[in-house]
Amino acid sequence: MTTFSFNPIGTINSCYKEKFGIPRQPNLVPAAETQLLLNQEFSEESVRGLEGFSHIWISFIFHATQAQGWKPMVRPPRLGGNKKVGVFATRSTFRPNPLGLSVVELERIEASAAGIILHLRGCDLLDQTPVIDIKPYLPYVDAVFDAQSGFAENSPAVNQQVKFSQQAKSDCELATLRIGVEVEKLVLQVLQLDPRPSYKQGEKTARVYSMKLYDFDLKWKYLDDNKIMVLALVL
Ligand code: SAH
Image: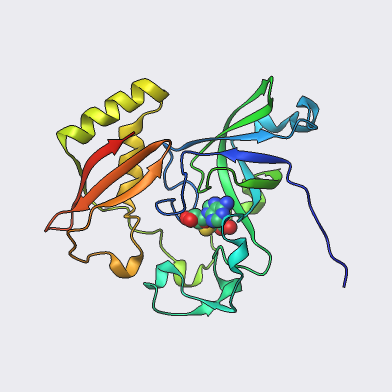
């Protein structure tokens, strides 16, 4: 059998430093700014004309999970994590070929000393993700309005209520000053999706959860009424 090998064309620089907490699809957290740095061999010529597109497809490698292999059936979070479907009926990261595909917003293209940088918004990508290819998003072919989407017919609920403690509010303000990103908005959008696995959503727990966002540890807990209380952003 013929095998194919591809070299990455660039690398993602993302605020998501670990898998836990990353949105399960792109565009659910528009406040997340991400950069794609192309390898030095790609000059400005290779992206000429791309600036006219508001959105692009990114194909990438699920590099952090590829060593874990794959199974023919998986439990997608959308089915509450308790019903199995075939791997090819899902967007699972555990696939025979660990390839991911995301449509994301392209804000601008920068020619920097380090190489060409694509400034993106709303990615569902882990930091250091290797990118294999970029293509322009073409609504007239790619947006199919009467498409059926199996068990994922509706967009996931974005209704988890999130409150900020005084500490968390001031941590977010300081973080915004330090890194120049609207951190409170980012935290709100990430936590509104409730990063817990779906079978745990709604569960009462006293546990303090945490995820790495930029170089912070974001800490939160669930109140008795299941609302989220953001506790702190620890450096
Ligand atoms: N939109 C893509 C990805 C969907 S899965 C697709 O449909 O192919 C999205 C999940 O992939 C995220 O929640 C995150 O947990 C995981 N992920 C993102 N980047 C990854 C990487 N480089 N390696 C492993 N998992 C990654």
